[in-house]
Length: 265
Image (cartoon, rainbow, N blue to C red):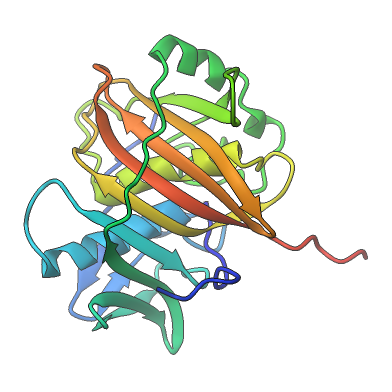
C-alpha cells in the first residue's frame, strides 16, 4: 500500500485504465509516476517493490520464470522524482538523494503459496470489502475505491478453518498487458487486509515474491491471502495469484508494519 521506515528488528537486506507500469528508468535509476501512489504523496509499496525487483533481475539472467526476490522498503518513495540505483553486495540499493528507499536481493526462501478458492467465492468476498467505508489510503492504486484508474482490487474475508483468510477477483482490462510491477502490486494490499488493515493502519515493510507468469488481459484472476502471525509491530501475511484455470501465477510473503497511533491533540 505505502512504504515505511526500516522494518523494526530487521537488517536492511475491474476497471483499470492501462495497467502497464510506464516506469521511467535509465542509467540514473527509477521514477515512480504519480498514478502508482499508496498514500497521496508516496508510492504504492507493492508496485515500487516490483519495479525495484525488475531492475535487479536483468543483472542476473533473462529467464521468464523468476527466482525469489526480496525487497525491503526503508522510506516512503516520492512520486515523479528521480531515484538513483546502485549495485551493492550482490543486490540493488535505491536512494532518494542520500536516503535509502529500498534494498533488493535474490533469496532462496521456500515461499508457501496460499491455497486457491473458487472465483465465485472470491467474488462474494469482494462484495464485503470494508475499504468502501473505512480506508486509510482511499486513493491507493491497488485497493483504493477513490482511484478510478487503479487496479480496484477489493478483497473481503472468507470463512475457512485456521488463520484469517481473504480473497478477491481481478480482471485486467482487455487489451492491456500487466507487467512485473503491476503483478507485485496486485499481490500487495490484500495481505494488509488479511492482517487486519480495517482495524489498524499498516504499511508494507518487506515483500518477497516469485512471479512464474504474468496475468492475462481480459481474464478473471483470483487473489487470496492469509495472516501468518505478528511480532510486535510486524505483521506477517502471504498472498497468491491464480489464473482462471487455477494455475498459480505468482506468490509472495510480506512483513507489514503497524504505524504508531497519532498523538492525542
